[in-house]
Image (cartoon, rainbow, N blue to C red; front, side, top):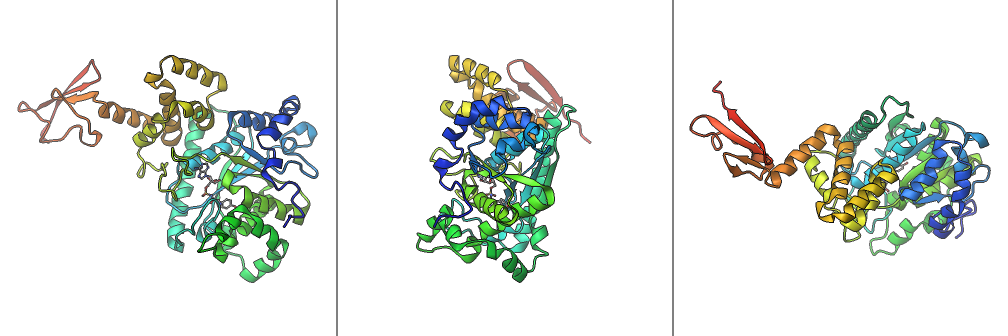
Length: 421
Ligand code: YSA
């Protein structure tokens, strides 16, 4: 069934690849603010994939960021992260980078932890129902995710702000508003604005209804909660843009329809592409291939190695998506790379930039130390050590004279004298 409020429901009609390229010169011509240019720049880099809806009723997405045509500055942009695990992963990083780009040009961003929504489980992009998580587990995951988000935002600020004033980065948890919500009041006030035909037409629902086990009511109602979140953030924070991976577009559309119906106002969705593994599976917890951002789950060295291993045909795309390096610098890196691909210069730069953002300068230094050891660059008492966890072992590496000889790289020699305390 067609959604009456949805002016542009099919993907081909969204400002997808063709649509945005079509208006790009216009966007550039009218770019009075850095953020408006940002949409075009990030579209060109490949970070912003789709924009929804194609046409607002009163405002267009680029106009929101354009002070010249009545755009309000700063805008507020949000993205949600469900605490189904106790750490963010590399897939989440892309959505987070989208938020960071807005923050850098002065807009306020909200990272929303889905302490309530994680209890239901988002069916988007899933062929099977999620294993139910109990309230305590979700709560402790939510705390961990909040911490991870704040740590990343702090690293980002510390490494890149250089005294510049950026927009705010706020972490919220949607359990804050659902905890206080009476179920009957909620269904009466919100439920009436959603049409079953529209909810059923979502790809996430259709896919699941075709499976033998079908779909639970909890999962089915997920999109209603995500839509309500958007409405809540619109009302309380003036948030008009929701960002998410392209698997989130159905949920974002539900939010758009709900808000537009209730308020007559225009809100928008922006998607980032889904990062997949070499087999094409979405990188994340569900596929069991997550590369975590919490160092206890994936060490800085393992994160570094993940990016170092990327194939030549992906590395340029990843430099554009996962780093803040300007395009001319990426071009330069790639020109050098094609002359000496065996040196993996582009992969090394990619790995260094991402590891630094996620784990700070110290994390990058630790990853490089580990790498040097695993590549045989360190010897103790003239023997190579390749296990970073046991470089210097008391009792094993102390010579009879109470010394150990350490060699790092080709030329750095150290004599270690052990003291009896
Ligand atoms: C969103 C809004 C709300 O109001 C409430 C909750 C949410 C969370 C959302 N429904 C969700 O389940 N997201 S997620 O926890 O699975 O992922 C967080 C974000 O990272 C999403 O935008 C998702 O699309 C994105 N993501 C996850 N894996 C990804 C990825 N993006 C790119 N590549 C991947 N491999």
